[in-house]
Image (cartoon, one colour):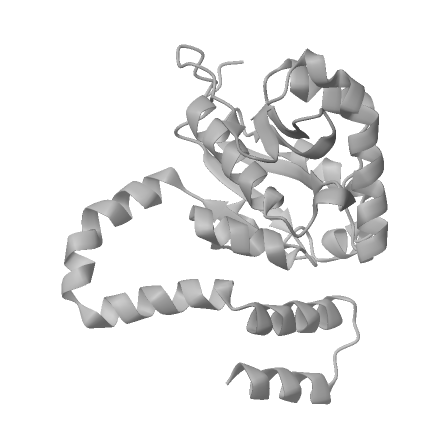
Length: 258
């Protein structure tokens, strides 16, 4: 079936990013040896955080590598550092950058952000008109997404492709998702819309002339970047969705928010 935003093959591959510590590049069949390490770390990391994650098999990871739809980070002595892959939904109308994971040996080094930037660049090259979205419970990922131009959205703005939502079945929070009829869950939905981005760029000169618009726009971005407020919001959301809210927690959240 024809994909509205099928992969652009005429453009060159995204070049690797090389710094003093890592080589961040589009993964290929040469990296199959790291597939098992990647899925094992995805699962153990999710258990450590006490959050859900859609499980993936080594074969699935290898498939993404072979298709050129994944980014891998390796140290200069070929030690695995991190990984992320691309999925497409709705015949290419939507793209998800999924499975972002960093080796425990290299966390707190800024590597996750660099991998996310590289897979975002790859997504924009291969699917320039597609909406890029993500579901995450991770505060750090939300901040990275915000820097890339994502905005928080409701679940209704995401793909309605049943195949995507079926991938959530292995998540420990899947019961909440189904109970809410796919309208909400513990994950926060974020979306990058290239059409909206282009529209904002055209309107940018007008917005700069209006102090009210500028304050409103900056305020919405600062909310996403404000770790303290976002952490409280995520905690309260979890309490509500798991059926354990309290008047005290609501009062405490509102007091700290204001």
